[in-house]
Amino acid sequence: AQSVTQPDIHITVSEGASLELRCNYSYGATPYLFWYVQSPGQGLQLLLKYFSGDTLVQGIKGFEAEFKRSQSSFNLRKPSVHWSDAAEYFCAVGGYNFNKIYFGSGTKLNVKP
Amino acid sequence: DADVTQTPRNRITKTGKRIMLECSQTKGHDRMYWYRQDPGLGLRLIYYSFDVKDINKGEISDGYSVSRQAQAKFSLSLESAIPNQTALYFCATSDSVERTDTQYFGPGTRLTVL
Image 1 (cartoon, rainbow over the protein chains, first blue to last red):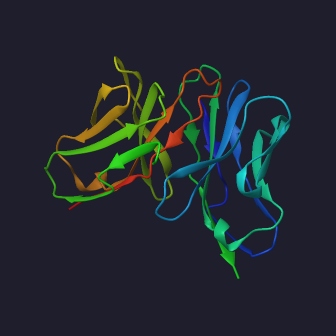
Image 2 (tube, rainbow over the protein chains, first blue to last red):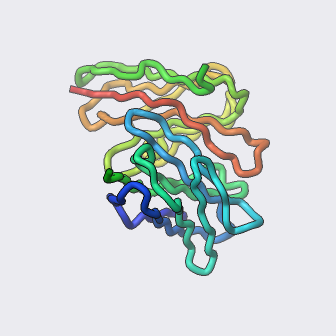
């Protein structure tokens, strides 16, 4: 069965520090992988996605993610966090002709001044 | 203007009442989805529709029904609301032509059932 695990429920980082949010997936074939961000009171905005090619994917707002097939992971990174990055982040997995995507339970990011 | 809109944005209702949440999109996408979000559970799929005549149950469809009135409109109904349906509800759309079927979300409807 397809599933996504985000092992960190809450993460707190200082402004200017680097960030890595973890995502592990379970899927039997080549996955399509997504990261979404949800700011307080807002809907979900797509940050980036991977479906083929270069395993390092660049997204909006300075985020990037790396697909590692051997580890079934798709971790999200940012070299320097800004206070406006405080939000909840969701990883999701789908696949070719998959018709649906499955979401992880989310990671809430707090940013300390 | 937003590509995916949801009405109402907030709703408080009482147990046993019938509620309809509406979703409209101007993206021209053929696929539409309804999710609910609960703290710590992420997003769970309620119903999805691949075109006007194709509606499918998701993982948590009990207590909900949907109507796809047109390609651009997809409504979610709670026939008799109960308190554990208190949640944040999201509509999403995707385009079957796009290989990855990326989903685009509306702003959400916060529903409280007393």
